[in-house]
Image 1 (cartoon, one colour):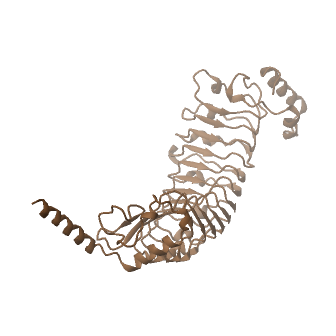
Image 2: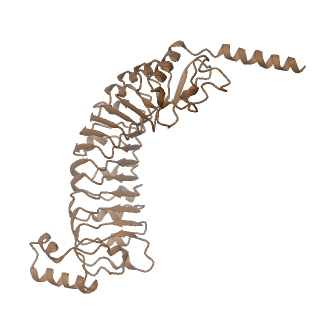
Length: 399
């Protein structure tokens, strides 16, 4: 009886192996993929080391060969996923990857792949997830990537990609998450895919205006991260009225003006806004106080003038407020310094007076009288002196 059981297990195993016949073009693509990676970067205990082609890649069970890094279709004939372990594989992405036409996921993140992304990647029409983050890919993003109509996630961040964004980016109609941050991309923003939920293009060299036509129809967009680029001009009122917007980071650019309207019907999902380190002039936008659940607002190190709107201090949802590094004047609202306040941040490095020296919000010290006088050169001298003396007295002689 014991021997019969073993015999049946043996037969079943080999029947499964016989049925697991991976398409030859998929096998050749996997072989090309592995051979394009430097052998010296493949540790003996890694996923790639287990890719031994003396066995069929989709044969089951996986005991010693193809134990990880690759997945197959239910009928065990096609490769559907390549997800490498992040251990420092070094090599290039072979153009023959295009033969894996049933691939839905390609994730090579946190390795040392280099060279260009092959244009033949456009053949992967079933691809839903393409993650090449934290490698050393260079050259431009191939225009052919916009042929991937099933793509939902595209993450090419933390590479050395250069050139302009593909003009037909908006043809990626299924795309929900796009992250091209920390590259060397240049040029303007093209029209974006209409179903986008998250957009991250931080730390590139993108420039020009942020135009309404670029974001037209993006009713589901929740997160926009465009910090550390060279965007300029006016940020129109339409931007903060995008219906699903929750988080905005446009810091470290060259915006000069921001237009803010009250949200329609008083409804908005905006939680966090970062416009710090730009060149925004004029008065602080009063209407930010009308965004019902806004909890974090940064306008630090711009060229803002005038008084702090009273509505900012009365906003119960606000927890973080950074207005430091501007040219704000007047006495800051007393509510900021009440015993039960939960607001953290900074009002320092302005031209405020009466900002309590013992409050963390008033750090760092205010600007010198000479700097503030130059900023308000049209203001009567006597009034400036009265304001500045008041500030000195309130802060124990420190500004």
